[in-house]
Image 1: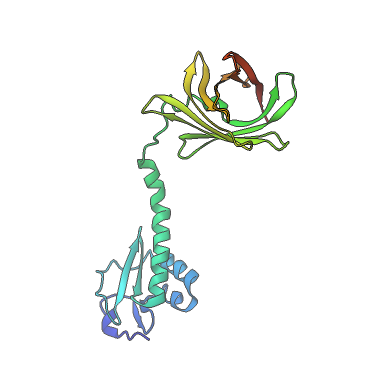
Image 2: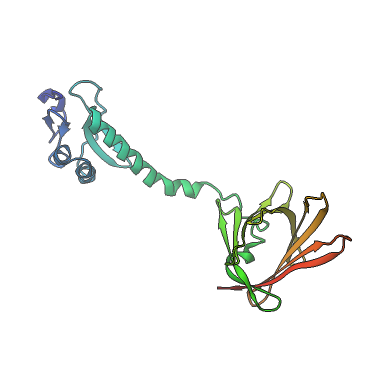
Length: 248
């Protein structure tokens, strides 16, 4: 038990000593008896009339003054009670300060160049040129609004994902695609004549190099055409996939 005498609380109007909890008012006394929830409730209830006193010295029988964004309470420097109070103080500080922080930190990826691929964002059905459903695709803006995350699934055992970002230092769009066949495809490029065009190459097990060129073209009706072209053994461009995206 911590010993608190009348002198410890004598300079604080309407507060009385308690052997375990330090100086308490009528509002804060239940916190000592009922635990954590009551402590927070009593802190809020006491915020209107708790005196703005000087911080008292640490030591046996001495209370400690906490003020968190206008909430004031007198608590003792004692084991569990102090730890719980500090924990909830941190939570309250984060809760109150986060909105203010969000207002002061500028968004890094809000320029027109970073938003050039926004027409691809959404949940889509993807159909081949012959009208058959190829799969579904979901594209979301993530990581502070800087990355487009693609999740493609045919529903027949094949799936893949890509991360897309505008590299402002090189003024280039970049895509990293990975899929369930083990393919890693790195593409780069940008907007050409209203289309997003990204190009790259892969190396086969026989060390043969295949070039890839994928374009996404938005249509007036809100759909998107994706055309994937690759080079054959002779180096000629052939269509690998021609699909139309319509919103689900």
